[in-house]
Image (cartoon, rainbow, N blue to C red):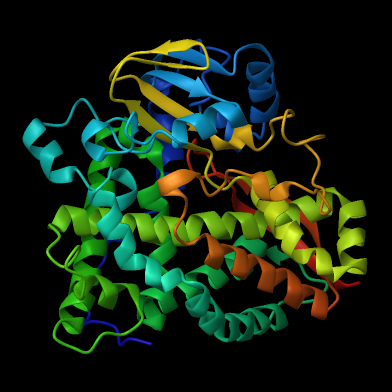
Length: 441
């Protein structure tokens, strides 16, 4: 593991979610007074876990529909599995490029000076179209090949065993902090060759990078950019340390030695760090928490899994479907077109709600139940589809599979016994806190 750079004073900001909650309390006038029923950009429906019926109504009556005047401007909801596959299959017509608006529902804050805004554009390869996207994706793809995943298996299993063996039996604790964050942060540190002693900076940066709603407030947007600047400063010193050295199998070294990425601007460097940190942290950690919550909510399925551990790989796919750790991705139409009968104009913002597609009754019978034997669980869209399908999907699946296998080996049964706090966000979907108690089955 890498040695930490020389001491540097990082700001001690509150978590992104705490900062946003406080800002919303201090600015009640910024809340939408009369929200439209299908305006699913409202983050409170995810915090309160009330999003399910809204999307079910939408899928039944108008799976493609237009919202006007939301906090994020006008946009199209795309809520069905079939429609999302069509959008994802036409990347030239439905652009991911940051130049057209990027991959989230938010737009750049209108109150920021254009010169400042230009400096704050953070290109990343998921928010690029071909051919730009192709070269940068190929740079990091070797970190997630089957042979590399196999290499990481032993280290991951050892670390998972250590974390599980450290948990107190019969005493309540926060699963998100003690297990989900610890395991995903450890894997991120390994992938980046990141100093172990500073690894908790990674989830802090991930929260500030991945919270779309921070763009609604000037002061939070300023704080977010300052924090991301500190992240770039830290990684910049790791980059400098690896320049001129023989290649190693970590992501920083891969970028340093890649013609497609070793001349990135500071903004592009920050953008790709954001992508890799949020993609490697928030998605897996929220599924690690969500699968525990689901097994406790559906004890019959937990019993099935305990009796037949060969179902664990399929249970991982079902967990990814059921949790859907990233609720949406956005595209922008590059020309006038039609989407399953709805006219879409060039420049329109098209928001694909994976969280809805993964509950689409036309694809998944009884979609609101967690079913470890579901025969088509792998059809979930939690990793996207097409050229932008998550490059780290295999690693995420491995982390989840190893967690469930090591829990089974210890006959570990986890009950949700205390407070749960869900993420207040329309992009990252999961748990901020989940108090549990562990027993032996």
